[in-house]
Image (cartoon, rainbow, N blue to C red; front, side, top):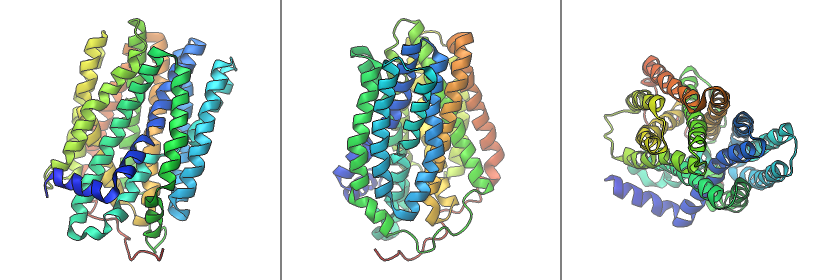
Length: 413
């Protein structure tokens, strides 16, 4: 089956409403991180505090996401995502009110943490729904699952294109407060719609009867967590460095648009992953794309203009989605089927944790050394990703191909 035919089959199984809801529902998380950074930096005059608030949101989301994922594995996604969407939307509106109302920075940072803890990780939970949706496809299911993960990787990256781009447009036209408010409204609407979609019940109805069999955090899964942590550091630091450089150039509203260019190449590369031959296995893909990250981050150290930054970030993006897709596919294969929801949210959570580390460290270095200080963190993350991929190849190659280990007959609905 050709990649195009695989995508057509996949989307026909899901339906256009699900594809729309699951995509737009993940935008608020992408918007809220940069929106909070710009909002708090603008109201306090400090990139360090802006990075701290955005980092607090990301850290709290990273801490809460695995708990929510484990709960969704037990009771189903519908009640968990519904409560998170409503609570997260209200919490983001509270951040706006506090920041614009002149509240103490510590209070605003704490509110951002509450918002992060409440926000659902819709992208990882959407990945869990594809296996039951493709269950009846017989021998086509493995191919469709690879296509699904390619799509989800591209969708995640597209959300980090449109999210920061929308933030940038709203900042230019109005202000960061409206941008964060729009993220809250989208979460209230589309997060709720994702929770109530019939596929939420389908995923829970077809959970394995062998509940929570086997260990989740093994040596190989720890490697995958480390890989996602480093890509999060890359995201956080490059976003902070971009904000500093564009602000110094007198064009702060372009920060979101420049950061969005990271996802343009990433989306295209992510969609193209479905066309890669099976003999080019996922462990090798992790290694190749990690090498690409290490090489393509280095030009940031000699980038001092917004046009050059656009080009460097765009090219770097071609490595991001294939790297993350490979890590998530290996993550699904490395854990028991009854723990896949927890595994997916945990991988996403450490990405958020990495974002927090990257944005906080880069913010501190940017206060002292400008955008080059922030981008030095990006380069370090790319180099460490390559070293980790090289060291972990023997472990990654032991992960079996195909479905998770404890897939058994589905429970009665």
